Image (cartoon, rainbow, N blue to C red; front, side, top):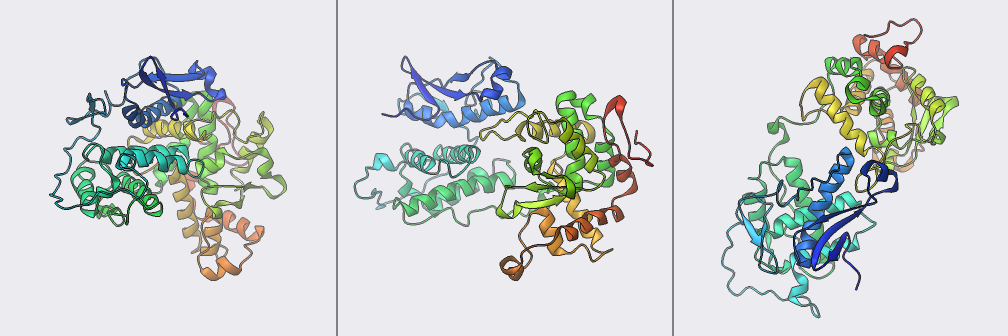
Length: 452
């Protein structure tokens, strides 16, 4: 029988086992990370592994893996309620709320599909089948998030609850009495509901249930009332970020990377994952542009002209690349081995030290600022319009006709739009964009005053 994924058994006890990527072995100091799950029940181990893996990847991403293993269910996720595993032992419940009250279900039927026992239709058992089936289709990170959401819901239901007993009322009780009272953000709540809805959609297709009780269960809270909607940077915030020295704050390795990423991100509007995935072969030197070969969506594939203020950075990166990447030396990490995984965390630390804590801005706010500049430029020149903005941002074309019949814009049109940014970028921001390098060798473009 095949061993459950990420699990191993030693002397009757279960452990989570994560193979460390080869490029991280030197940093972590081990080829495999093995942590006790404190159970001899395979059912409990299957439930706990996703929480353990999430913790391990967080530690690896932050490069702070240590021997001080602190289980999620004993530290971060311990709530007032506790449940029991299949062996009858208590195990912490990650949900800090009591299970929703169950209404009487007299006469309700709980029959499994023909040929499938009720034991095989429990929430957690069918979750394992679902996750196995979508392996390779969805990222490991998405699968972990799915598992965490399903497990949280399963904790509020009776032991060995069949998926066929979950109707719209049960789903609604979980959303209203657990998720909405948890204090989590609307985005997190909707993500958990989406995970549960995805699983029940699969259950419907496979004949385990007749309908999806999670459809339409999303939070009705308005984002504007939360006060934490993501936004573009203000000019003052951009000046503060561009003026700060990331090397002094974060160290040489990631400081130099952040210095360049901020400037290129603001002047191209690219996502951080797209920039970190750039290879030197993707750069089209004679056009002062680069190619995004794959991205978040199909429309993300595009040619991106580089503004004259960012092109010297690209040239320097190309000349110093030692591994074929524009941003050399990045360590892939996270469940899916993303080159941007650690960089995102480093930027968050840098941003908070410069601007203070805020949930309204992140690295993606450079992309929002780029879009804002393009919109403002559209009032100054006809070179910038909705089609051009969509093309530069890697979004879908604004009309169905263009999406079906247009072959796209020519490079000259995109270049004209990028050049139009000079009309709308605030002078203080532009002044600090003219700084090309860091430290004692700080240079500025000819004829420009270097920023402090």
